[in-house]
Length: 434
Image (cartoon, rainbow, N blue to C red; front, side, top):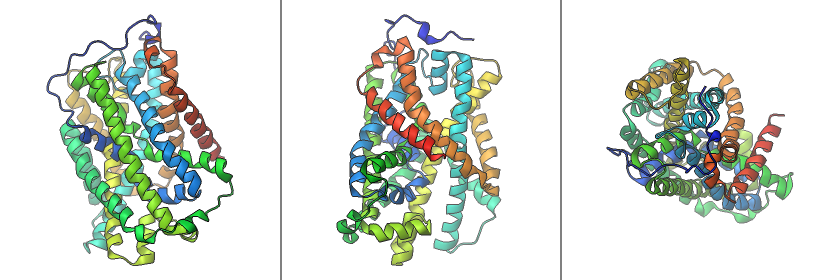
């Protein structure tokens, strides 16, 4: 068993002087920001306006002001825990193993997979359904055999990941840019229908404070990009050097850009939909249990919405699949290393390309039949992922920072914000199970 890193002296420096990695493949800030943004904005965005807007004007306004700082601070702490690990190019699981020992690392690797894999499978089913519906209903094409459609929808993004970081970043940009454009276009399209007075009539039974406590977890889960944040952190170390000033500045700026994109485009979409629907529309849409764009398309009979709805859904799910698959690959590779009796960095080894290929092949071979069969249990399993997302995004980084002497320089007053909101989200999530 490896020795936990918290046995190190308290004055041990965090990180070493940087020796930038050779052959940087990190690309510009927007390339990684697109990947992180795409991980967060999944199929849930189509229901987010109904979930977030149902609490009324003031809770939504306060939540809009809070969600940006919460997202930035929690993800920055998450990434810094990884980038300040003893070994270079660590991912989350390798970092945690170095801090707490191999046994704890193995337990967390299992929890990490349990958190991400059900979400990945939900996206695999969703993208197959959405693309199939688009081909038949919008394009007027034939209904493809589900086995072939699923292989295509899951195989393409998985192949982009298997081809390496450059291909993955390019694929993320290809899906995220249309998503940003269509989200903005739809939000602006609804402006003439905004009705502040009708939206102000929304009076939730839980009251202002209760509504604020209920709405924040909805937004937090819609803004989380921890599925790809671990590989982002590993890439920053590999390309700019562990503990370097350049790597630190780069990761801060990219997380800030991602947070800004999420806050501006997602919340503009939420506000525009909520203001256009009003109190009666919110209730009707909730009762119909339809994605918000589908509901608008039905009540307005607008061709633009009929086209925009599947484009937004397809781009959102594709980009989220890419981001979550990155995390699933990390979990699988770490489990492979443990099974082989090795404790070293799960991203290391003599043949990383082969390791990646094997992991993505396993992902495809699991996701493909699930997408064909559409088992209903996946949605139920994914609920448990919500609890683990909260623990990994808020609680685990804070526990690590305060338990490991090496990370003492990361103990700062802003951590109190992350801890406070983490406890609120965790409590609300647990209560939601009952």
